[in-house]
Image 1 (tube, rainbow, N blue to C red):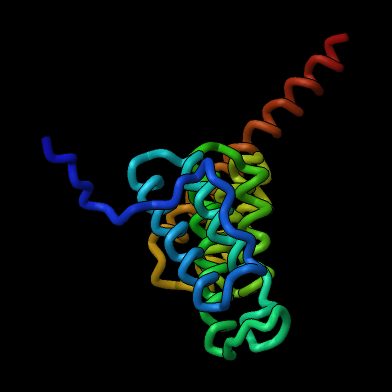
Image 2 (image 1 turned 180 degrees about the vertical axis):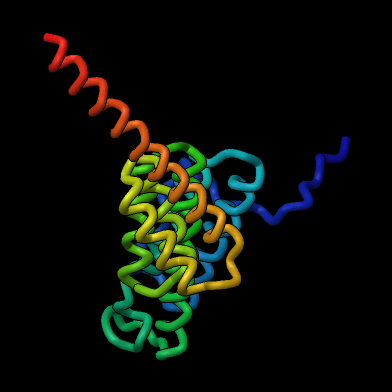
Amino acid sequence: MPSEMSPFPPRPDPTQAPPPYWELGAAARLAESSSARAAGNASYGAGDYEGAVGWYERALSYVEREDGLDGGGGGCSGSESLVAEARAARLSLLLNAAAASLKLSHFTAALDVAGAALALDPGCARALYRRAQAKEGLADVVGAIEDALAAARAEPQSREARELLARLRAKAGQETVEERARARRMMVAGKAG
């Protein structure tokens, strides 16, 4: 009886410990990272956001350190293009991990991961957008507006950033109206007492 063939490339087993990055050459580290990122993307696409975060973290473990990618450390040979490739991969993985964390409503994790992405690229519109979403989830409307505004300025054609900014501004306006009404009720209650 023939076995079923999967249309997807084989993925590493997430329950097995990955080979340590220092045992791999630069190209192998990037390949392992790419394989784990692909598995994370597949998990994300299937709605398995916890699994996706795990895969993205595994992929990051191969590219979070640059030693050995530039020809130094560990006897690995590499080049500046490999360092640049690793940095780009790291940024992409951080953005993906933030998106998966947001899907799970893990807002603090998303905030931290988006912050790490912004440490790599302070003007990254997607990182600003994801951090704004995380701040919104944490009820930091003012901080969310600041990040959404920065995201909209960094990428003016982003409909998502503009819509988030409009929603946040409306929410801030509604909160102000509610706060005024609450203060009025407190003043009226104080005069009656």
